[in-house]
Structure formats: C-alpha cells, structure tokens
Image (cartoon, rainbow, N blue to C red; front, side, top):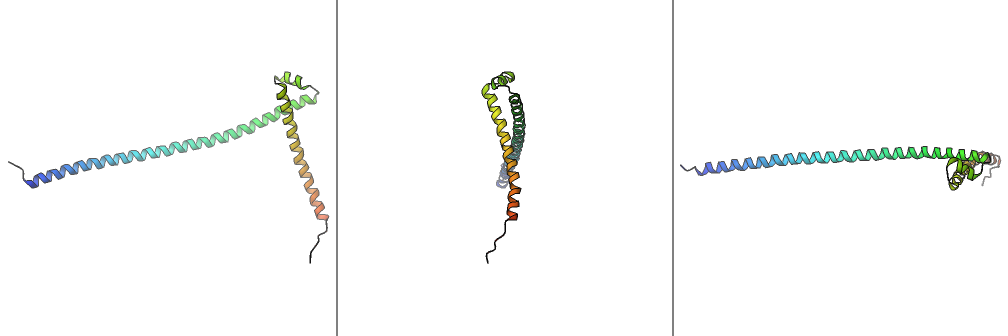
Length: 141
C-alpha cells in the first residue's frame, strides 16, 4: 500500500527538522568551543603581560643593586688609590685590567662630583633667598 502524499510530506518535514536540529546543535557546540578558545587566548595574553611587568620590575631592581655594588667597587679602588697604590698594582691585586681600574676611579670621582654639586646647589639656595630678602622692593606707581 502506498503512503499518502501528506504522510510522505510529514516524514520529509521531520527528517529536515532533525537535520536542522543536529546542524544547530553542532553550530552551538562550535560557538562554545570558539568562545572557550578566545577566553583562553585572553588569559594567555594576560599571563604574558603580567610576567613582562614583573620581569621589568625585577630588571630595574637588579640594575639598582648592580649600580650600588659598582659604587662599592669604585670606593674600594679609590680607597686603594688613597693608600698610594699605583693603578697597575691595584689592577693586579683585583685581577682587573688597568683600563677597568681607571674606569672605576673615574666613576668614583664622578659620583663624588655629583654629590658635591648637589650640596653646592643646596648651600647656595638659602644664600640667594637671604640676599633676595634683604634687597629693597621697588614699586612702580
């Protein structure tokens, strides 16, 4: 017995609905997977950005500490020079080249001149203020 036209049409409609439902479910799963991917990508970028900030902070701190130790080296070399030890002898004692010793001596004297300049500026500022305070004011009428 042959199916009626309406039964065939109903069955075809059901098959189309099932196929569409499967397609929509697959599309929903793909959408959720894409969303999960982009969330993970954002988290990875945030992790890298945070790590780079921490690296920059650590690098800056290390550079400050290295500068302090370099100043300490300069003070030691300057102290040896103050004991009237020659540059070649200082280089030999510290296992440095003569050029390195001279560079450390220059750095030590450069640091002292910056300190001297700062104190000179600080000392001259109050003197200028007192000079300005004692100068008579002129008023244009």
